[in-house]
Picture 1 (cartoon, helix red, strand yellow):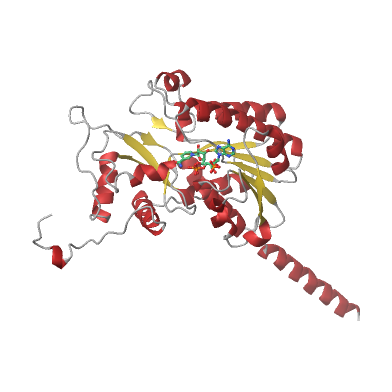
Picture 2 (picture 1 turned 90 degrees about the horizontal axis):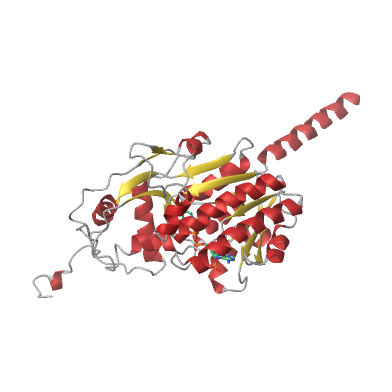
Length: 357
Ligand SMILES: NC(=O)c1ccc[n+]([C@@H]2O[C@H](COP(=O)([O-])OP(=O)(O)OC[C@H]3O[C@@H](n4cnc5c(N)ncnc54)[C@H](OP(=O)(O)O)[C@@H]3O)[C@@H](O)[C@H]2O)c1
């Protein structure tokens, strides 16, 4: 008799242990994502729901039809709550963070208008850290900063490998009226200061220019960077370099730095640095049917050289970056699917052959 009971207990314990092992990593945890309907945040919400988290997503108007893509995500019916919040309204941020185990602060204006940019970016971030400290349940805050807080430094030598130790020069940002970079750099600095003062565990992700498919119905600023080379609005490309990363890797990076207990500090999130000529070359080869520019707007100066950049910290957390050419391909397909770019035929129709334009 006793033997049977022991066997049953062992079986029950084994079953419980197996069930525990099968639970997704986010099971039983609630996290807040600010600016949930944005380009990056939408992918982040999707990934968090897939990993079993309950998500409180802040939006400025939960009834706005532009949030419909979030409500349609797998798991949203059961585990997504949209909360009304504005970055400049502390009480709304405080309410959104209530009961949360983690916070992903992605909301920010994305503009070079100083009036619209700096205050919400900086004060909103301070509010998020304060509310996280007051909630008493938040294990970690992940802040979406930017490459704009890293590379705007005119004194950096050409051979320096850009890594997490680099900071943008605030005076240079001001002088060049680069208010987006200024706002992001100040917001990140203030976030670090406030987190230290209040004992909040803060980890920062610094994405470079983000490309890849869109979940949201509207065109965000970094998608315009690609769209303008396809819809005829950019006749030439600039003599400039830029680092790129896929939006799905940015979401993945946020979740990795949240879940890895050892994660700390900043994480540069970049696949590679390309000259604009490389970007238009890739686009032109993949989509020859669009009027992709073939000439540079600067025919006098030497071609700008791509700087070197390290993504080692995220690779060490297991992230394998999607190649930028795949991301560019999927950006264009997504812009077509969402109706932002007409689908053109690659072939010249036979009936137009020989017909004067
Ligand atoms: N995309 C990139 O290339 C890139 C690169 C590096 C870093 N980032 C950073 O990534 C984050 C997300 O950017 P994104 O590209 O996904 O841009 P996005 O699609 O424009 O998303 C930004 C979100 O922030 C919200 N927001 C702006 N001001 C707000 C305010 N005062 N109160 C509440 N919400 C506000 C917006 O809400 P509304 O829709 O209501 O305006 C939107 O949902 C930002 O912090 C940005 O600085 C982006």
